Image (cartoon, rainbow, N blue to C red):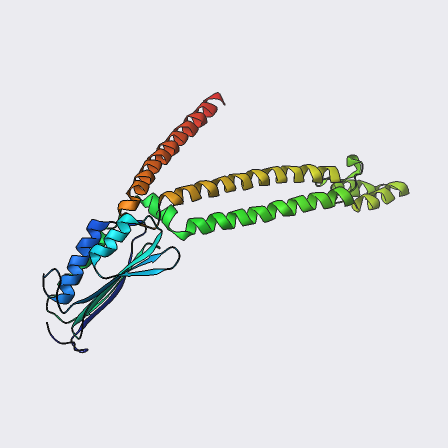
Amino acid sequence: MQEYNPLTTTKISKTFDIPGYVIDSNILNRVHAIAQRTVAGTDDVEPAHLQSAYWVTTGDEDMLKFGTIDAIIAYLDSEPVETRSISLQYVTPGQAGISLVFQTKGKIELSAYGNALDFQFNIDQLSREIQRCDQEYSWLVRTFVFRPFTRRMLGSLLGWLSLFLLFNVGYYLYASRMGVNVDPSIIPSGNTYFQEVEETIRSEDIARKLDTLLIAQLRGFTNVQDILLRQERLIFFSLVAVAITIALVAVFRAVVRLYPLSFFAFASQEKVLADLHRKREIWGVAIIISFIVNLVAGLIVALLD
């Protein structure tokens, strides 16, 4: 291989955004073989001039270092521990290097440099192998489960509905203590008051004129019993809306747990992955049945009306 030359060396840094990717020992071995061949410039199983290192970051933020790809796979196959990331590093001093990090947020980081004639070709092949981790979920899953918009929207909706509910409860308590009721028949409504004013102007009855002036003070007045009735309705609908939103949040969280942003499917986690697939099928059937039931119920109600 050629010596490192900053003027002719190809440098690559890219992030693969693959929400829900799954990596297992087969993919890891293929990625390792391509990366090692690219950096070492040979198909030898253990090139003498190649320096490589492998790390696993656990859920406790411990970084465990391994000397070979077989050692890291053996550990991942045997230990049912939470894995935060897997890092692979290959360096041929003064010639080429590749660094790969499989993260838990659905992202895979690739950094590489080299000046061999087939370097870009090998990196493209490595990129295609990394893309094999993509599970190619439906657009519904990619749009509503993996993107943070749905989580933020539900959180904001729940917050605003809760504030609206608290405001209506507070106003209900305030009105019940401070409000009063008067005879509804003396409260002017609509344009009838202006007709009363017209008739009063033409009248010579002083008492009627005074009554009309006093009634003017009641324009826009609402009896507290009407206010409380309105607030009770608003509180009821607010409670229903909050309950529905909480249910949606609970369902969303349950679905999100079925679609982790990344999954390290080694021997110790294969049963977990199989359980996830089974639960996804159950949820899918449940959603389809619920949709059909609601559709049929809507049609029945429409026909009865």
